[in-house]
Image (tube, rainbow, N blue to C red; front, side):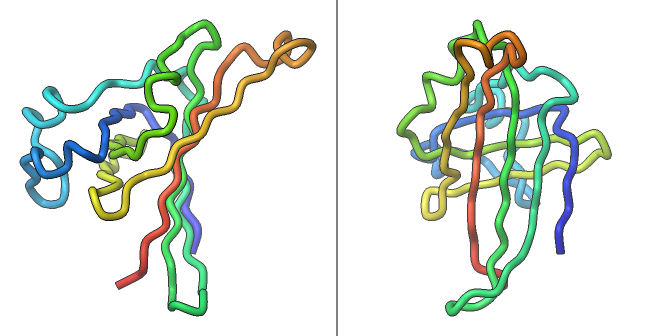
Length: 135
């Protein structure tokens, strides 16, 4: 199974906030989103969510990864370095996803070009991933 969806809204919070969230039907309430999450300044049509499954010695795993580009001059990416995260995602096809918990947080990395690559890519890629056991 593999599925990719275009992200239209990405909100980020630290995993330490998980116990403070009000969650209904596996999605944080709007009040929780407004209080504990920050919106990523996305370059539209340059952010996607990918979900896939794979077998392992421990059983079947679900891998979720989100890649979101922000403008290169934005320092938004810096505040998440070295932190375990929670993500709230809305996609172009109307899906809503809440990814991460205090027990299985989302991991974060980023990628930026400089020098000659900077002329071709004027963005910073924020990369998020989580692997969970399939129930």
